[in-house]
Every structure is written in structure tokens, then in C-alpha cells.
Image (cartoon, rainbow, N blue to C red):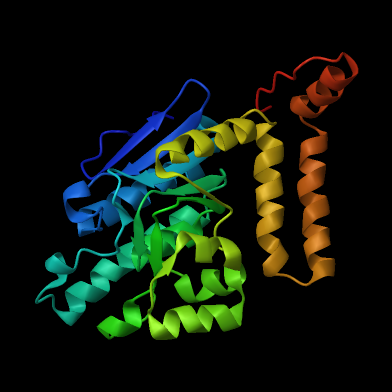
Length: 266
């Protein structure tokens, strides 16, 4: 599959190591999402669902140092009719599903403000690294709506339902340190070191057997959705799909031969 990279509001680059970086690229608007960005994010991540072999790990971040993404572009929404609003939100729903359904691991690199839909994008990723100056908030109830990009579903899974209720019902911003303490963020680093830290972790993931990584991600996603017995049954099915791969044999051979494995995703 030929990977589409010619977007207007986002940048997509996949390196020789097959680690891909998606950059939200509207820094003049704190990387807020207009309708075009919503469509482009949806289309970008759908590509990796169609062909998960084109990358081994993905990183999503924002252009500039101030904002990761401050949610929907409210200037564009000024005077928007109910029907147009609903239609725009249908694109958001497709977008967040494309992120959550992506079989390739996604790391969010939060380089600044992650408010409303921006925070929901971070929550839809597999895990999150944040710059020390990053700030988070789900401000929707202060604007007469509620989180609509899976925020009410993903936040309780990250921080517990009581903390999620406090965050969502007050709409109060919080710091990267708070997010780390509550379990929403995996690591907080100085801003200039953020991408180095994220890319190092992405490289570690990318160096592992791609099919194994994708199967492990699928199984982990079921941990909060199924009872333990059903989840374990899913895990065994996912495990068995790795047994027949060339990479499984390569991993064993490399270990026994005391060398680095050369995984090919087969």
C-alpha cells in the first residue's frame, strides 16, 4: 500500500526504522482541530488499519512548544447549526475510532496544552509521555456539552472513575505532574527532551517482533473490556497466531545464538 502523507493540517513521516510520527500542524491555532484536521486524522490512522505492516510504532505530537491540541476549533464552530455540528462530530467519532482501532502501538507525546478533544486524543493512544509544562483538561461541561471523543470511557480506565468524575465534572485543568501521579501519563520529562524520550521508546517497540507487538496490544485492550476468563481465552488465541510466524523461530534462534534478532513481520 502507498502511504498517503500529503496532508494540509497534519504531517506524517515514517522513518527507515518504520517508526511513524504524526504531527498536528496548526500551531497558529494551538493545533486545534478544524473539520479538515478531523478528516485528515481519521484518514491518516485508517491507513494503518488497512495495512499495519507499513509501521511498527506511531507517535502523535503537536507542532510548536505551547500546544499539543486544544480540542475543536471553536472559531469554526461559531454560529454552526445543530445539523452541521452533528455532522462534524460524526467525523470526530470516526477519527477517534480510527485511533483506538489502530493495530500499531501509538504513543502520545504531549508538548503543551492538551485540552478537550486534544486530551481525548491522548487518552485514545496506548500510553502518554508529557513535557513538564504540559497541561490537561476536559473542559466540555464548561461549554455546555460533554466529552464526545471517548473521554468518559477512556479517562476512567486511566485514572479510576472517582478521579475521572472530578476531572470531567469540574472541567478544571491539571498539570503533567498530576497526570503522572494519577496514572494517566507514563513519564514526564523536560520539554526539550520529550521527543528524544518518546522516540527511544518507540524504537524499542519497533525493534520487537511486529506481529507479536500487534497481538499483545489487541490482548491488552481486552483486559478492561472482558472478564478475566474471557480475556485469557482471547490472549491464547492471540498467542497462537504468533506461534506459526517466522519471527517466532527467529527470536528463539537469535537468543540461542546470542545475537540481535532480525524480525521481518512474517
